Image (cartoon, rainbow, N blue to C red; front, side):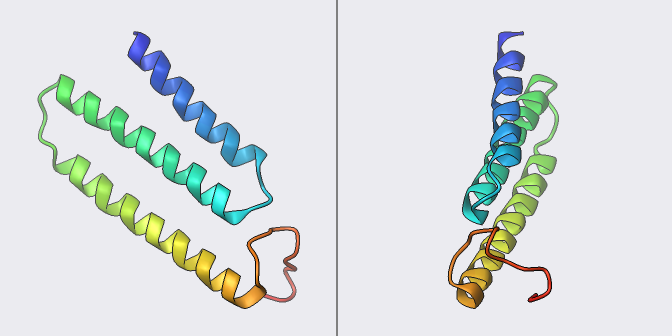
Length: 95
């Protein structure tokens, strides 16, 4: 019960950081990765408690790595194109 409360607290802390800080793209990507890691640990403990196979955990890790690399590539292309990663300096008409 305490472990479930701890993981819920970590997950909602990640959601709070993701929704409250909208100025930098890097902080937004880091909070998304934190949420993915918390979900990975929750799924891992859930599968361990029922003695299931860990194929889904490996598939989840593959998708989270793909999501992280896609986010970093978007970050690099935005920094090369605009010079910074501030959301306020971008215009929808320029993109």
